[in-house]
Length: 83
Image (cartoon, rainbow, N blue to C red):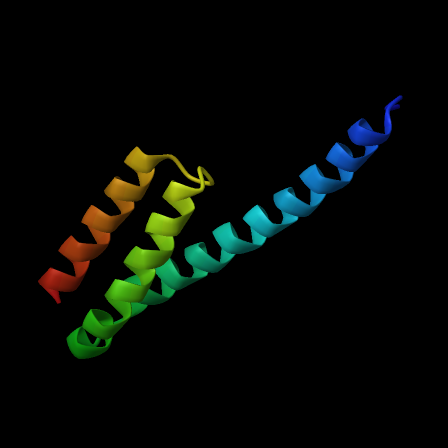
């Protein structure tokens, strides 16, 4: 167990950050699934910028790796272009 007040605070803070990261990551994964399952090109094109923005935010905050973000965006743009 932690011996210092600051260590106890850090444990609480880490848990809060972990839960927030998990929530944001899950939200983006759901948005990606929704975009991948979209059949209408017009709807997919309107959804794409918001999903790309969400992916960029995750990469910026180191929730996902920047290469993974680039890979996801590339695949999504290819998918939307092929509709």
